[in-house]
Image (cartoon, rainbow, N blue to C red):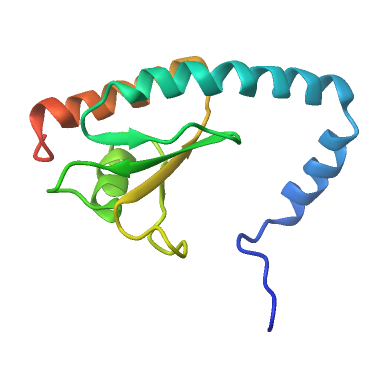
Length: 127
């Protein structure tokens, strides 16, 4: 296979996308939410010492892990054990094992994820 879609989707997702792309009001609300969240979350996560976020251009934030004791696989597992999903960007060409990314969730979820990063910063990876 010469070309392959980087992320596969199930048929339910494909059906939902077709429906949502026709829902102009949903598109407007989602776009407005993402625009608002970009700056707020970038500012919020910029104050962490464990990661360095890059200014988002899409609905996710790419971050470099600054903590020398962590790599993307380890941090992803720690955060997953706290009930959150972040993406290990190691397989992405040009990034390596010090990069993660996560999408914008609800305001509450974004603040709770931030709290988890703060806890890791404060307590290390043992707790």
